[in-house]
Image (cartoon, rainbow, N blue to C red; front, side):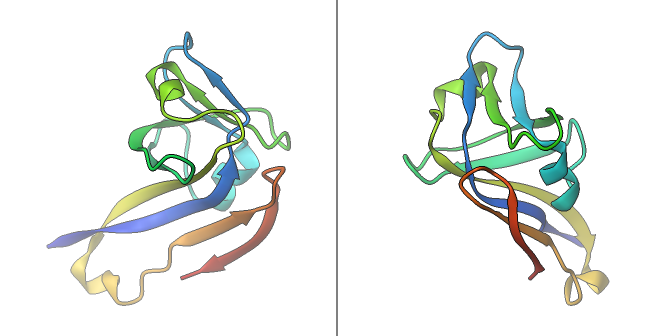
Length: 120
């Protein structure tokens, strides 16, 4: 048996843009992707703290060090620039590894720079 467990989280990131006419996805600074163990094109869930929206899409890398969190395509309807969001990725973990599972938690400042990291 496996359990769906949190693998990585970017906590309270600020949405920097929304592009309705892009093909889809969320563009994320690759520095944040690496810190949260999220790879390009991996499925992510996004929770909008400002309006309660919860939706899924996939991550694509932006420009390193720019702090970009841009919603693209249909996801652009779910958040506005300035909204705070939580971005999560999950993994299927074998039952025998669940007790020792350690997701990567990344906390960012208002410019989407890493403020702290921790394992749960």
